[in-house]
Image 1 (cartoon, one colour):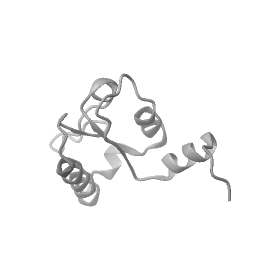
Image 2 (tube, one colour):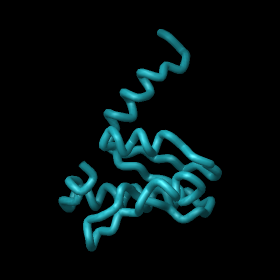
Image 3 (cartoon, rainbow, N blue to C red):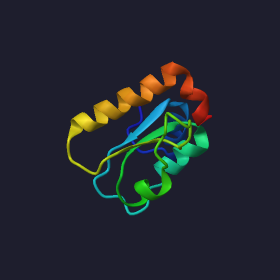
Length: 99
């Protein structure tokens, strides 16, 4: 067993995920949400810094957006609610909007 950071493995994990939760309180840029967009992994981010700049909130009425955004508040329940909204959108046929 190897206990160390492995960039290739990190990318494979993110590429194989259905959703990527990035609850950063402060993020001047952020690369993982951009990797998520490249790999087709739906990003769930806090609306702060570069995360707010690079992710367009999903609009269920128009089927547009690149991920899900949470308000910039420190309440963990918002992440659970957003993850549920993401899963619900996927189950109601909006999964294709992210591919």
